[in-house]
Length: 162
Image 1: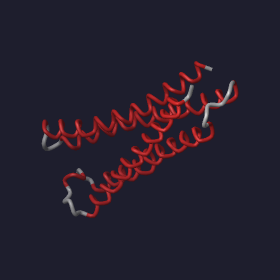
Image 2: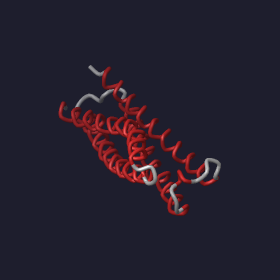
Image 3: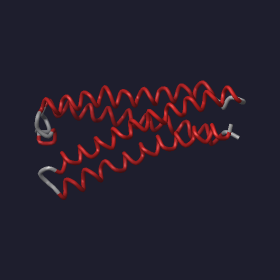
């Protein structure tokens, strides 16, 4: 039972830790690369952060799968962690949010960037394409924050477990 709980907790820590690192890294990556290479820095920063985000999504899917399997096994082997069903629901919701950010929003952002053909940052602030891009970007940030909140709820439940 302790091995299953360890796998569950490790996967949870990796997932929410990754979200925190992304939140801390994004402004730094964009600031440093824009300062060092004013003409191409934002494009390079977007490519770097996009790569980090893709790796994070893969890690989040693996973490979610490990958590679901571990939680199921804990429920079958011993007394179910409380609350049991809500934990499953939170993990599934976190996975769903990650899928939306990765596949839906990420796909739309990539399609917009390809269609626009120039760096989005080079568009005027009032340009309709930039406004839509900024909305999608904001939605992704909001959903990732909701995923982090779900992870923190799971941490809270674990902290209360005796």
